[in-house]
Length: 348
Ligand code: ATP
Ligand code: MG
Ligand code: FE
Figure: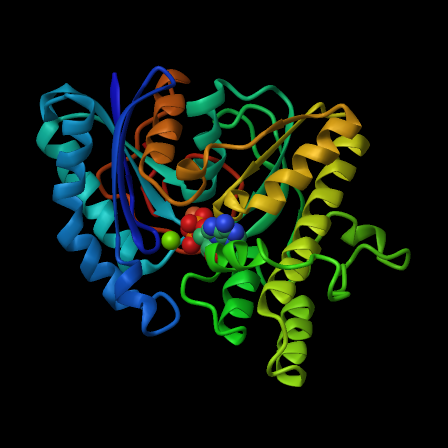
């Protein structure tokens, strides 16, 4: 069947249509511009924007695929993690579509969506693979076997800020525009990555074994903020390039260490920060040197979108997973343990 995927966990309203691992069409709306003057996502504004955008975005995805609503055979929706109000809007819409079309509904973990995004471009994931999930709210190294049949094994997570959050916050202190990640990436093009010696948190010889695959980015954020305070006229491109280098170095070093230690031949890098040009380039360089196959989704599938949620829904349908009952609720802080989520739903 054709699976409609709906994403509304943060500031992008996304709809995608997937059948048998193939992306048929998608559409995206963003309330990013409405948040720009506040320097960060305002939950109430995001929820309201989803309410306005959802219907048109679903229709645009259907148009993009050349399909009619009656062609939809299942609906998948992000039930968490994310902003409560934003998630509520997507889940309410998904329930309505599933009810009106009389098709099954699937609850999807947003980060599993980020992982599945890569399958739309590069086909099924090998079993096992190491996945580096780097986004605005999360930074995790996980071991994925079968995304929808097996539990996801956490090797390490950030102990404080996410990598994307670090980019976004440092961009603010450097006076770069919102959103910060892409702005840092652009500014770094004209900078020297060796200009400033930013720390490489949790990589030193005294890093406890338990933190081998853990990350910490708040110290890096503070180091960049200190530098900005002390050097009011300092080179922003140099700071951006040096920060980006530190983040990319730590992320790829730990990811490849995990591949080596677990004897895994494929590294997958997903989430918004996977769009970063230095993260992509350094991952490529280090994977090539280590004989590890690297998979990174195309840019447009790295940041939030509906296609990635449809991709998980499609995998769930084909795995014969149970649909969620109509009373399914959101789970704003769902840990990444399983791709399918059915919080609050009574047992079938
Ligand atoms: P999560 O997926 O953890 O819930 P999110 O959905 O808000 O968070 P994504 O949409 O996956 O996050 O990614 C957005 C993040 O990616 C932001 O922090 C943004 O700054 C960062 N980002 C996007 N493009 C780039 C880039 N080119 N370089 C660095 N960071 C980037
Ligand atoms: Mg976003
Ligand atoms: Fe995301």
